[in-house]
Structure formats: C-alpha cells, structure tokens
Image 1 (spheres, rainbow, N blue to C red):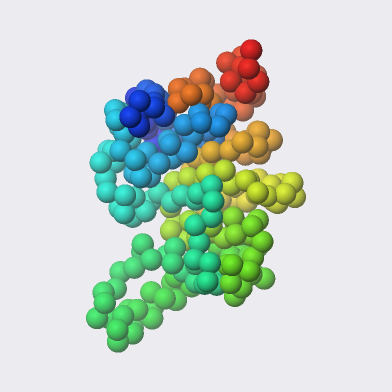
Image 2 (cartoon, helix red, strand yellow):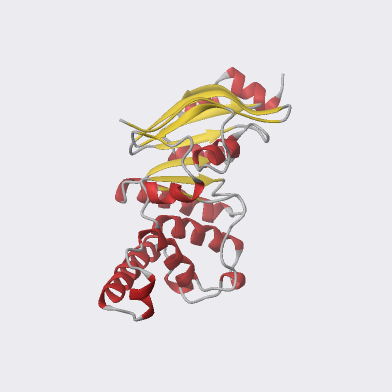
Length: 252
C-alpha cells in the first residue's frame, strides 16, 4: 500500500524549472532514497512534501489524503517529520529539552490546565518523558541528554535532530542528507539506526543522500533525479548501474 504518492510534481521559480513532472510512490514500511547530483531537485522534492513550497503543477497524497494545499504547520500533525541539511536545533537548550519540543505536536492540554499544572498536564509530561527516553536509548544518546546543543560536535547534533523528529512519532520520516558531516564510523552507525527506525519502530523513511554506500545498505528502492527530472526508480544496484545515472554523475 502506498503511504505517499506524488503525481506529476513540478515547481518553477521564475524561469528555473527546479522539478519537472516527477511522479513516484513510497510504500508503507520501506526505506526510499532520492539521489542525484547537486541541483537535481532532491531537497525541493522534500520541500514540496513538507509544504514549504507550493507545486506549480501536480499533487501529493499522504496516507490516502491529498495534502497538496495543506498548511505547512499542519504537516507534523498528519504524521510527517523531517530533518534538514543543516541542523535546526535550539543551540542554547539541552538535548533533553530539544527532544521534548518534538513531543509538542501531541499536546492535549490547554493553557489554563498548564498554568495550574493540573493532573492531566502531569500525566502528559510523564508520557512525553517516556517517549523521549525511548528515543534516547534507541540512538545511544544517554551520555548527552543534559548537554547543551551548542557544545556538541556536529555528528551528535545530526543524531539529536533525527531523535527530535522521532519524538513526533511520525508515520513518515524525511531525512535530508543525514550522513552529511559524519565520519565513516558515524555513517556506519547511522545505517544500523535507520534499520532500527524502519523495522523496530515501523516508520517509513524517505532519504536524500549522496553517500551511495549508505544508500545501498539502507534502501529498498532508489529514485534518481537530474536537472529536476526523473531518470529511473529501482533497486540500489539497478539505479547505480543505470547508464543515464552514470552519465548524470560522471558526464559523457
């Protein structure tokens, strides 16, 4: 069953055609990667799914619902979480507080209840803490929980951003170049965490990634783009050996 379906997606910025008539489906429970050279339109696809951009043409359907014109702020509530190429965290806050912020979309209490810290608020906070602790254990962030984000190395910040996205308890996780800035050991760890996120948590993953070793290890299917256009969709080996993909990366 398709969890996400993009139909004839196009977006133009003046005369620049960033994405041109791209269609694809992502099945529930799979890891689906998007690859291509710089400027291929990979992150633009993410911005269309997460409603940062409006498509010039085409539509996006998620979990059986057309989300093409859904407001950006409502996307997380529908069950879509994402990370960015450059980490977008609260630098002066601790890891724990950053992860708790990720639970905010599930808040069920109102302002009056929170002002008086009523029982419903206390129970909700305990639920949020349990969610955060499970994610901390999953991604081995125990030793960083109380540290300030601004004091952490870049690789750990990347993992904290993934952890915060997981605290939304999403159905679909969009990872924009998760291995960017990671060393080889951290990238190997990331491949195992992706497997845990997908299989243990049952979260469907769409990943934009340049590291083809990571793509091969983690992906069920891969979509290749070049110049905003779809080249092919297939298994990692099929895509890596596709002549048009080779030409897009290496030239004629």
